[in-house]
Length: 250
Image 1 (cartoon, rainbow, N blue to C red):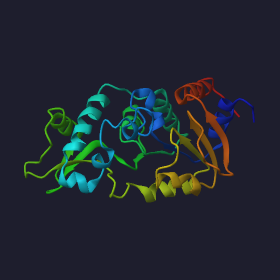
Image 2: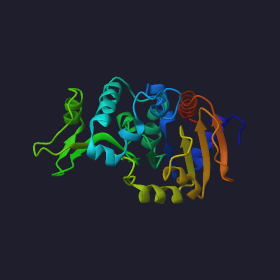
Image 3: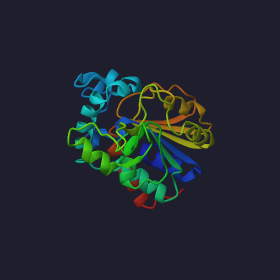
């Protein structure tokens, strides 16, 4: 196998029969969404009270803090586009080289890029429902209400909640994500420090090879990490897709 990490990675993908990806906030920072735990993130900037925003018990008592955050997040989200890496993962899926994307992100950028098999473990804003009558609402309906600075209510007067996972709620698709991890012969960890559980436990379940791509060093001390790329994520995936466009062969 060549020493060039881009070519190493490309050949690992070509040789794999079951590649799965786990992504975190680092994949979306180049799109303009701050990592919640990064220098400008929700948990460090103190612009919002994170303990109130994503706590389901507090939301049921007072949804206003969450919807103040949601207004700014949705306004920001409507101005951004998927990154090079989002598009690269969608392209790899289209080529039959990627089985699925498991993500901790709530921004919906994988879907915007064209990925079809996405497991949003923490949900997203793309759908919502009334907590009283369970009526479903699509993204455009919720967005219109939120951008008017009103707390979204259903016609039955129940509060509308986006289908994102709050503290105190179970993550989505965990068992399916676990099945994918356990069947993967190649597993990418991209843009996540692997500190938020249960998603952080998935690499431990992988029997195959693991490739880590992140802008900073992460502590994933596992014997089957065969390649660890510490660089700008978009730069790496741009070069990786360049290798595929060059019709790399084994």
